[in-house]
Image (tube, rainbow, N blue to C red; front, side, top):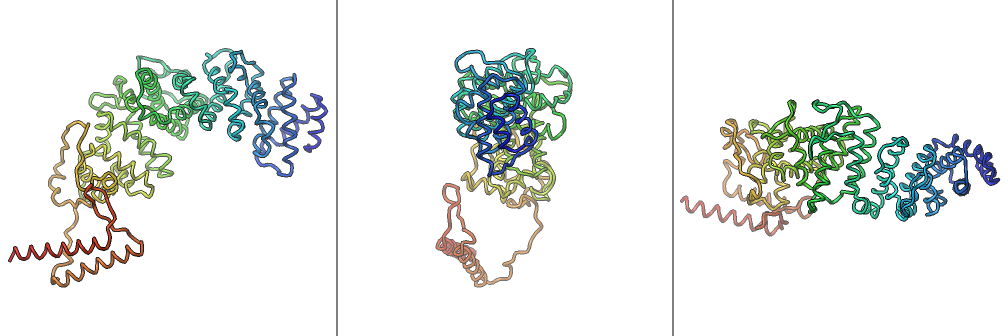
Length: 547
């Protein structure tokens, strides 16, 4: 039906005529996501009329038709004006059953389909319009959503409404900094959403920080989560990620720590659970890992607290099931090799910081990633072991990926420079050592515990023949300077200096020097000449002493 005809029927004010016209529009444009620019004014007018109808007493079917039209029109960024005002947002929140929480009154409970459609409209508006987000913050939509999330499941409880409540809360927490702070502090979002996640997963608590799913209290592998539970849980995890940003290194008091440790116990169960399908499980675990990386590091010890079961992975008397799952998750991301910055870094950082703080985690990870060294014939980056894969990342083109991979291995070596070079080779280690000013000095072991770095028989036998730069035993190479006279050697040295000088002047390379602080500094041509002269003087003195 032509837009002008629909508008004409709406302008009559007749509910039945409007309903039939809107139904026709909704059926025709239901899957439309691109719009004709020439009809923008008409779409805005249709939006105004639909909002106007919603201020009247309407039958649920007509309410639903108006909201469906608004949802379709809200996809067009150029036609948002009728829906962005505080009055329009209040009207939509009223139909979504959210209005009234700001002043303490009980919100209306409209038809279920109407509620869902209004929530979809609000999601579109919050996602698309800054003005709508400001209106939503003013109307305290977050408080209305929190109030509904607190309600226990009753006869009127709807999984679809719950999903869109969570989706709208996520959008508000992602796009509105003020609402994010309101959720985190005033509305006690971490505690609230932990309870909602607990309820979504249907967990059973065996102790203060030990939880299982009731459908598999003693099973090694619980049955997969249903699609509905998985979708709800992932929305909750995304909201919690937003409101806990910046928390990992912040000092928390005893009360806050208890809330976060309770959440970690639930997240451990998320790691132990699978969804319906491998890709869905990967996505579910990804959101869990992202959130764990936000939480205070000292609270992550809860991951290790559950009692050992028959099928548990035990190390030093501690249950390492969750750490083992994190390690497997990281290796899968490594093997895929796609978008490593987005997919791998959260898990790398989580394992690194956990290993830095928790001794048992570090020792377990080291046993899996850096077992006693036996292969001394291949470069550290060659092979399919987890150590080889991580060492390869140390020369990755992405600086953040390269740094995080090196940092994990450095922590597993207890930040010992010599041990780090032993497992990675000096060439691979140089980047991190230079950045930390450790090119000429060893690192104080600091808070790390003392333990033996037992060498294998293969390593002890080959140790004196290992090239520290490549990290492997190299075949003996002939000395290219054998048979040269001193004049020839000096000529070749100056030739090399001149080549470096040309490359430096052409800005192809930047020669560097290790400074007194152990960090790299720029090396000028004069420095190269001075070093050459010092070398020649040293050689002359050595020859005089030998004579």
